[in-house]
Figure 1 (spheres, one colour):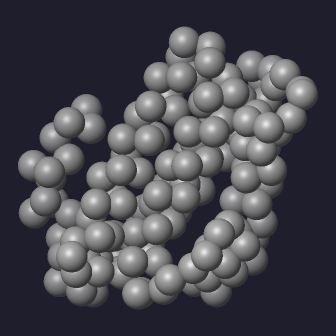
Figure 2 (tube, helix red, strand yellow):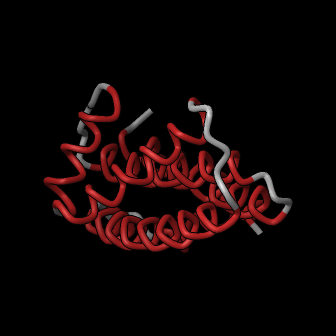
Length: 140
């Protein structure tokens, strides 16, 4: 598999995860939604990492590359959502609807920023997302 094929697979998965996060939020599965929003961000970030042929191990490595590509502010926002995902998945706290909605709003914003950058990078490589839309038809 080429790095561009891998990037397109992550692109599709990112959209699937974002759709699942929205559904979890709608049916009041707030912890699952927070987790899914984080993983949607991770998947769309992996598009950039694949395009740039960056291999990382774990969250901190991925975050360091994102900081280099997109800046400290965005990487800090991703870190905050990651921390909330850890609370949702691994801590004794029960997170509220309000927290989940706030995380969802931040995550959508981050997702779109990374998506725009990923699409620009794909176009630089000669890949136009609209040429592959049939591959994303299940996304809604």
